[in-house]
Length: 448
Ligand SMILES: C[S@@+](CC[C@H](N)C(=O)[O-])C[C@H]1O[C@@H](n2cnc3c(N)ncnc32)[C@H](O)[C@@H]1O
Image 1 (cartoon, rainbow, N blue to C red):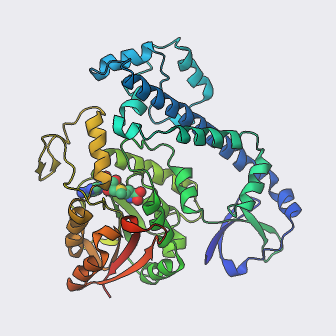
Image 2 (cartoon, rainbow, N blue to C red):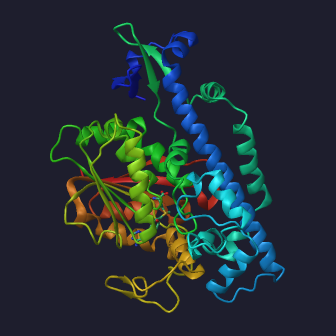
Image 3 (spheres, helix red, strand yellow):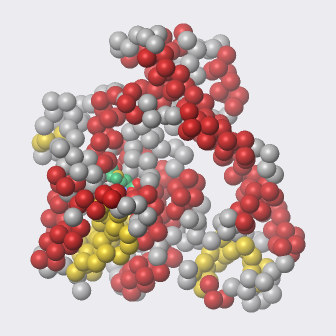
């Protein structure tokens, strides 16, 4: 890592080069100077994660109970309204939309008692964790997932703030300290690793209908912040004007574009970048806006605050000609017999008919939105091919694009096709961890 973010004990942020770090600091010195500051951070962190683990655990238990009871024929699934009444009668816990993770235990217990089971503050969507998924996807909620959440909660609960800090130090994910050249002590906040970054900023995302970050998302974060890609991006955008426009197509939860916005100065060599996103899924657009907001506010020293927004749209359609400097796409890349469509709907110029009319959060609607995030049609390339065809129109003269491919997309053939279009293209990273069709790679496409 070339640049690091440091914070002094007056909470002032600085960036510096890693070669200026003098790591031989006594642990006791750090404790002494940063105790209050660190303990405050860990108190917040502890409360946040205990609440997330607990809420997830109870939600998963509800889902398993629901599946079991459906299989036993207990609640009769006729229409959503009847089912909601039945769930209330059976004292299913209600989870208020979007605030599940941060809701306090007291509030949840109130729902548990059933005292206000008919109260107007519980609406149909409060059982969304059950309706939001198809029975098929719910059946993957296994006992081991529940046990995992419970274990995470139990592991964290007895830890003090200081224990957490020590554990982070063991895992090499901890603030460490260094002496500044003036002799004072500075704390070094390392760039969070990709999984941790995701965990920290996406607890609001409804994964029933928005793609949950996975190995492909993490690979993008790792590659975009790698030494070679930051060198490439900085050489292209550090000194040039106007400020570069960075767009993610299909942001899903928003974790990738949030990472780029939050670490702008480390990745692009400047905080003066503009970011934005386009997704077909309106829920993804809402989630992205919040993920970016959270990531920017917790990375004040390196972030670009100029997020233009997330727009619902089809691939490059909302973008102006030659306007994009950096484009990122983790596409729906799994080969499927056909592309997803809503029952009986057909494409029209503005997307899918029915998309604008879709009401509520039906099984079908959520299944469609999730299919949109992975189903890639023939060779998994139908959507990616449409995007590649559109690149000459939207990329600026200095523009480049990062596109993720899996082995079944036939990456060598894809790269050859791109080259024939007059572009340079190179594989800049691969997952290398998984064999078979899931093996992933990221290609960079650019003009000299
Ligand atoms: C594999 S997910 C990637 C999500 C996120 N970028 C990540 O890496 O975690 C693909 C995303 O592309 C979106 N998508 C699929 N087809 C699209 C299209 N034609 N136009 C815009 N977005 C699309 C999906 O809704 C989904 O959010």
